[in-house]
Image 1 (cartoon, rainbow, N blue to C red):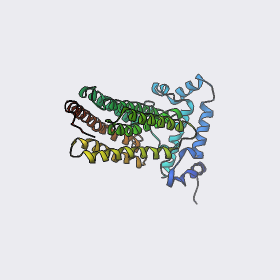
Image 2: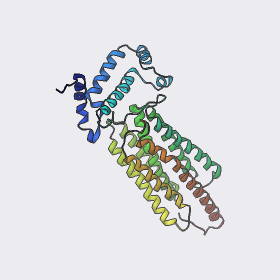
Image 3: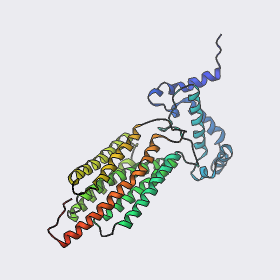
Image 4: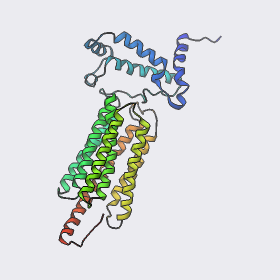
Length: 336
């Protein structure tokens, strides 16, 4: 006669609610198993208040100094521990690995929730910093579009800092700032494209466009800050803005292909950037519980940074030479 283990049956029932819709999107935090586990853990280990809770977490979970610095509370530790209990319960039954609060389960290292994304974000920051310094060494300050490179570089440095912070600890505030400043990089690329095309036009026109772009970004930041965060809409806005910037550069590349051979750098940058961004379309459980598609997308952008700055360096140098020729020979003119 077939015997049934009551404990195993109970666990199966608790997990079944998530296992059925797992073919589309497994949500481990919605399972009764995870909910009960976390509730029991918090009731048992987080019953005190204030510093006593933190001391309980340190003694019960063996927290490191990094965990304490990054603010892992007793409740956070319960969620983290129960997440892995739920994952292992799914794996034992051959069910798909579940997600928790919209994310795959990641192995925490040195207090960081998503260590690979943190490291790769910092690599992008270092690359932008090095390339911006290279730009300052090789381009004279009186060159046309000199400030555009600094606006772009500083915007990117700020964005990658907040990316590293968000992937270290996911809080509502760090999430908002990560998404908002990530969009600022995309919008800045569009702004730089417009300013590059209009650099010979009046200061008034460029000032009006600058004011419009800044006002739009402030309004969009406010929109993201109010109400429930709309991930799908934010992604569409990012794609639309990035596409406009790419199309603008592609048109420019076509127009100057015979006069400015270095156009290939910016063209190559956007083509490779689009290919790297395709990693975001992938969705798979983290390799070794660390490397996921999003972190690999961050890694793929690191070597592309130099392409953009190399283009700006040569473009600024060329524009400066043309400016000198125009001053010496008023009839000499390069419209773009």
